[in-house]
Image 1 (tube, rainbow, N blue to C red):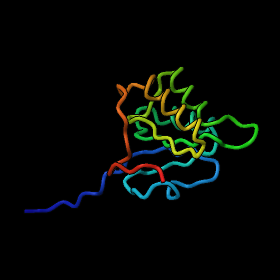
Image 2 (image 1 turned 180 degrees about the horizontal axis):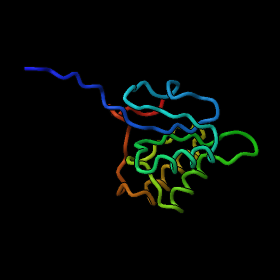
Image 3 (image 1 turned 45 degrees about the vertical axis):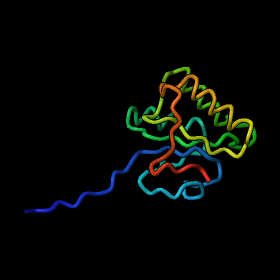
Length: 124
């Protein structure tokens, strides 16, 4: 009997943060992260990869005089454009972190389900 080696499943992830890398926040290697530093770049990636983006991990504070991560959440709500699984917020801004989680839960298409990355990993 021939055995076929299967590659681990790689999910497509979008990581929005101005300074950190996905490995600063997550240890899971089953996600192929694309790192973006601005909301505009995040929107472009989402539109270019429609229906293929599995995860989005969000920071809020992206720098002075630049749109913040919550603007991406507002855009997702306004356009009804969402990743395959509920976005995860890794922002250290406690107030905005909770705000983004609340509006994702309220307006996202996930029926209020809370979601962690594979292996139930949470942001560090």
